[in-house]
Length: 347
Image 1 (cartoon, rainbow, N blue to C red):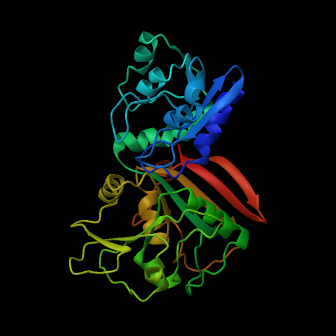
Image 2 (image 1 turned 180 degrees about the vertical axis):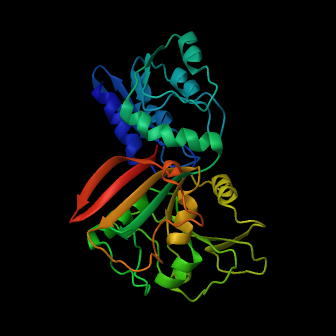
Image 3 (image 1 turned 120 degrees about the vertical axis):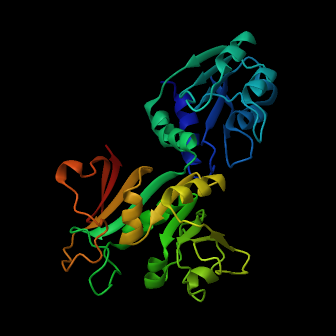
C-alpha cells in the first residue's frame, strides 16, 4: 500500500465526526514523488477533499496522481461532482481505497473516457472507516454508538442513586474525546435530573456535540446548568405539546410518538451523522435493543456494587432465553488506569 494512500486515509480519519451526514474523506495529489496538494472534507456543504487538494496543487496537478480514501463522487449535491474537477485539472491517474456502495456511479468510466488511469486499491482501515457510514446513509439513520460506564456487575449507580465516581478521571477524559468524535450526544430526562450534567467536550479545541434530551412528559427543570450553557445547541424531543422554551440555543421538537427509530430518522434529516447515547439504564436499554446499534463502548471499573439491580445498565421487561440473548464481539480493548475500555459490535 502506497504511503500516499495512507496519508489520504489519515486525513479522513482526522476529520471523522465533523462532516455530519457526509463521509470523512482525505486526498493527496502527488507529482514526481512529491506531495503538491492535500485536502480533507471539513464539514457538510464545504469543498470535498479532492477539490481542496487540487486547489492547493494548482497548475502542478496537471499530469499528477491523486490518492483518495473514497471513490470520487459523480453526483450533484451541495457541491459539483469531484470527477469533473479531476478532469479539469488534468490529473493523469486516480487511485482510491473504497468504493461508494451507496451510489450508482459511473465515475471510473467517466474518468477513463477522459483519458485518466483509474485504480481501485482496497484498504481495510479505510473500509472500516466507511462501513457504518454506508449503513447509515442507506437507512437514513445516524451511525449509533452507545456508551456505558459501570461496575463489574453492570451497575451505573448504587440503589441509593450514588454514581460519582464509578469509573476514574482518565475514563472521563476518554469520554470527552468520544463526544468530540460525534455530532450529537443523547440522554434522557432522568439522567439530566439526577446528574445535572453538561455533556460538553472539555479538551483543548474540542468540538461540543449537540445535546439531545428525550422526555416524553416534558417535565424539565430549565434552571439546571445544562440549559444555561450555550456551548452547543440543545434539542428536546417530547410528546408534550405544551413544552416551550424561548432560548436561542434550545429547540423543542414535538413528536406524537417518541419512537426510537422515528427519532433517529428525524436526527438524520437534521444533519446528525454520528450519534452517541450516554444516559441511564432505561434509555440505554432502549437503544441497546435497537436494530440500528453500530457500536457499544463499555467502560468497566474494577468494583462490585451489588444491591437489587435498580441501576443495571441493561434491563428488559421480559426474561430473555439464553439462545436469544444479543451476542457481541469485542473488536478492541484497552486498560485505562485499572479501568477497562471495551469496544463491541453486534454479531
